[in-house]
Length: 404
Image (tube, rainbow, N blue to C red; front, side, top):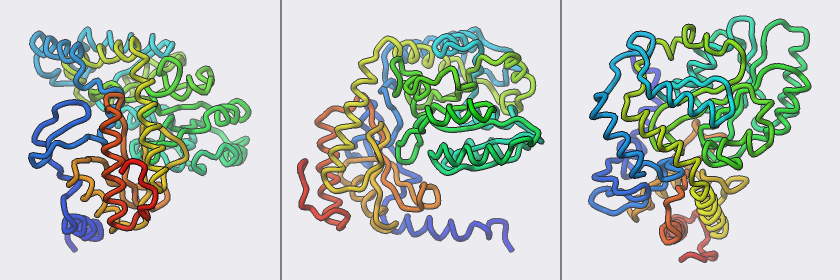
């Protein structure tokens, strides 16, 4: 037996992908020239898989703040905040996040993945109960494994199933933490948060919402699904990331619960990971300010999302339940999904290939993520290429080609 023998099935599947054409795991960009365009193999390519929702990766003010910070503070902190202390910008960012969400406390993590890993493994422990939506992100599942709470899954977006599972815990000792996401990352559907909040009020427990893909996207001010659904008072913890709408990297958790600050001395992923470098913190602070000051970015993002979603649906592609900045087209089989992804890339469109078992219903997906910076011309070009490649591969019948 070899060390990697248990992974041979994945190796063989990966080889099959490589033999079919370009390798989605090792795509190399010669250059990234804007939030929506890169160069791949010398070819101008529309970027449709980057989660750059508000297009802030090239914001001039954010770039200037980042450059200034690296010149004045160096390239990194070289240690955790417990060991090496906090820079003033770390505290400023946490203060800004707490104010934005109207919460008393905020903690910043080095990645969004780490935020879920740290928060979930720390809030509940042995004897407690962690109740997860079945389609939760990998970081949520990994956070549940790092802790020692009992993990209970309920059917995706099913408040009745959540209530049923909570009823089974009646009179059972231990805390209950319910975890859902604002926008789910594979097909872009949203949680029925108003109904889930009602279950939480009736049955008790705490509610955490991961707003990674909904921060800056949903809500009157961009605070996410909890704001859009009008249930912010029912949400005890909000986790999010800087790597989507804010165009950087990092994660956070905000809350108004008393004693939240003890997390800084008991949350191992926070305590034992080097803190965010000054340049990233500086750009994130400015990006947050820009997100707040420019609601038109959110309006343009949602307009673009509807344009792509409606266009793909009109062409005959199987799409998700509603338009969102994540627009996924379900493919009939893995072979055509890989071929379609290759055909799109060769025609100047880069997006994400999602294969089972990573997909919600074990069907392959082509996952698009829209930006406020995409032009109508770019979206229409994407639809034209989808129509051409989809027809050639028999994914659609070619009779509906409004964008051809």
